[in-house]
Image (tube, rainbow, N blue to C red; front, side):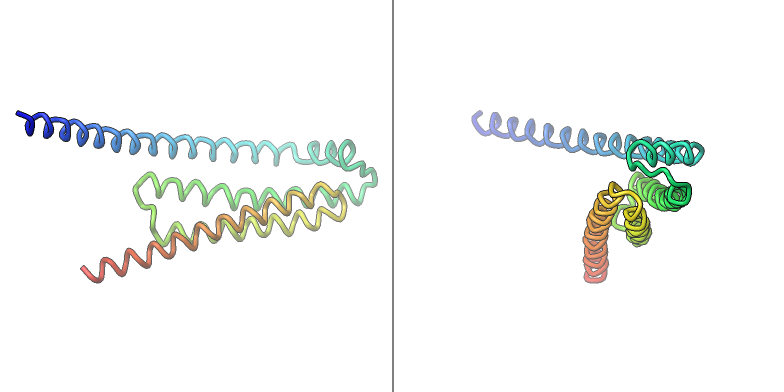
Length: 174
């Protein structure tokens, strides 16, 4: 009788564990879905920013940067539009990578290539912001943030690449 009660408790624990595992898998799907929605919203915001770019940059130049001469404002407008190209080069591969992850293609070489595109775009945005820093000092901070984010993405890419190589070695040994 005592063994039956003990095995019934183990069965309940195992059942609860599998329910919990299923819950977290559904939770991961929800997170991926929301991440894709957020990426789409950020892309839409970038499109709106492109459409209103001149107005936005003039506001930043006049109110925040206190830049009033036309050549420097025109340079800030050019820097802004170059930066938005980098933004698209971050958002589109990010969405593609999220699609791969929702198809359970997590440790895939395609994802590491997408992460390299994101890293390159972030470094490009950082360089763009460094150039903008000579006109407006607030741009230096954006440059540091972009470089830090590129370092994070590059580190994650290295982890993915190592996991892929370990997975391929495991597949060869079995």
